[in-house]
Image: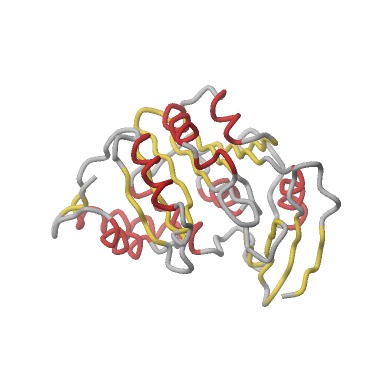
Length: 260
């Protein structure tokens, strides 16, 4: 994989941003070969990485969000998908590294800000602790070159996110299943939402999308979930039926229901 761009010298405390391309896919890296974001050049608004598609499974439980907050922008894959495919939603993305924001605009087709898309350069943990709340969905995907970034895995942070949610809202956290602290993070998330948690393993690599609900969406029947999945799959061309099947792997359930 050959690098095609190396971003200018980062500000103090910011990871170096690098961009590479291979087989028609452009990749974002932060100081290592680890892929932070990916975009298929011929389809820039699609979700190339499996874990980003898995995070969108929140639509099974909250199909019409109006306010979405993202902690971590990366190349902007999720921000672009939400912006283009959910016209009723406004999206605010908080990114600590200004060079990541610049790369997302210049290399990954992130559109300019308008009344539906807002980009904030700030520490996500600080921002969430001070924000006015009322978000339907909060997507947490903040990593540096080797691990989840700083305070974004703390009990305080997860508690602040739950308080920032609207009454029926959901937090979605991208975790690495191979992380030695995976179960520690998961326990903190469970504590923040009184155990109202679902885990969805992504199809590729070791990512797990964790869904934490401010209030329970109820124990849903598998046939109801599959019907919702078929409708969403037709609308968004994402593998929602696979998501429903994969929810059986890591969550309490019966033959007829997913238990939350």
